[in-house]
Image (cartoon, rainbow, N blue to C red; front, top):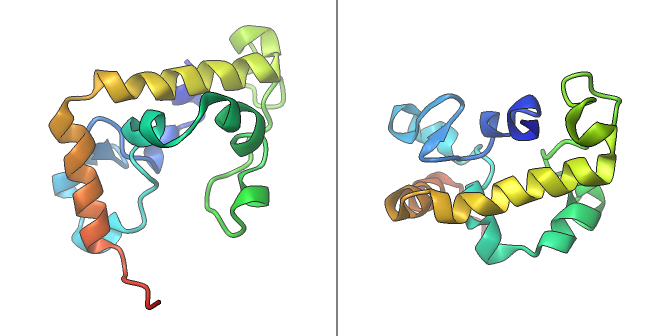
Length: 126
């Protein structure tokens, strides 16, 4: 699956886990470095935006983001055979999977990580 091949869960919170371990095992000072929980994507983002704007070039929308630009299509060997190497279909498959996480995760798993990340994130002055 493209989600595993791109290793999205190395940075994003998925099913109450990040970096391959439960959030409870991640030191508090590292929680602020995690990417947003993907279970919230369906409530916050639109499918077309993710497919056509965000995934092709996240840095163009949010300068300095740590979200990498992936060369969809056949450039990455681990995803070259997914959706026949069609970059649009690969992004669609990835987004459809991420949006499915909203309903697949238990309510506690989708709420608790956000609170943990928000409490660990440095406060900004306004």
